[in-house]
Amino acid sequence: MSELNPVLKLPLSFAYVGGVAFTAAGLFLSYRRGRPHALLLLCISAISFSWVEAPYDWAVYAQFPPGIPRMPSWWPLNMTWGGGQGGGLPAAVPPGYIAYFVLPTVIGVSLGHWLIKRFTLPRPTTLLTAGLVVGTLWAFMFNAILGAQLGVFYYGRVIEGLAIREGTKNQYPLYDSLAMGVQIMVFAYLLGRTDSLGRSLVEAWADSKAKSRLGSSMLSIAAVVVIGHAVYLSVFAPHLVTKVLHMQTVGPTEPLFEGVPNQPL
Image (cartoon, rainbow, N blue to C red):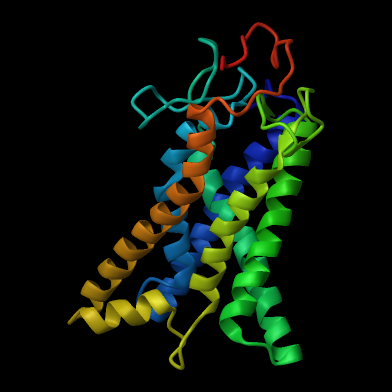
């Protein structure tokens, strides 16, 4: 990482430090409870579907600087475009998914609980709304400003009329923010909606199906992995459709990164 400029070091450090910190916090809370805590379950869910980032990058024409470390070629659907130089999914993505999705989830849940207590609002819709708003704003700040504006990554092609800074290498598709907001909305509901025993809905369901604490823990892990994949693949599907139909037609003609050709239509 020493050869990278400070702008690139910041998100990479956030990915590794944040991923480790949230996982450690989840493990600590799980140890105290004697079962996987909802926070740890979300960490497991986030890293489990991080492999989808590679085809997601391909579908939205996202490209990264060629100098950053990449995942090995065996990574599933390693389709992140690199033009033969620095291609493949960035190595920071798997731990980064934990930091990227869990941080705004925690913020959204905290905001939701405050709103519920302050204004006596219904818990389900408030948690979902807070998660969606916080998640969408977070994705815009991280992807549009830290990412596309500062050059951590670029979007080579966007749908006309649905992006900002269209036609420049700093363009950003606004529908990406909404997609990430939906994922964080679901995460906020899974973390914030608890029963009278303090169990998340997933934990309560697992307890009703399993005969032992270990069985319930395994079911909880399996459930959040399935839910995480189902939601993320559902928000990925529209991007894939627009990619296949060649609807992303707006983008710069010059290379996004020197010496690396842009991903073709």
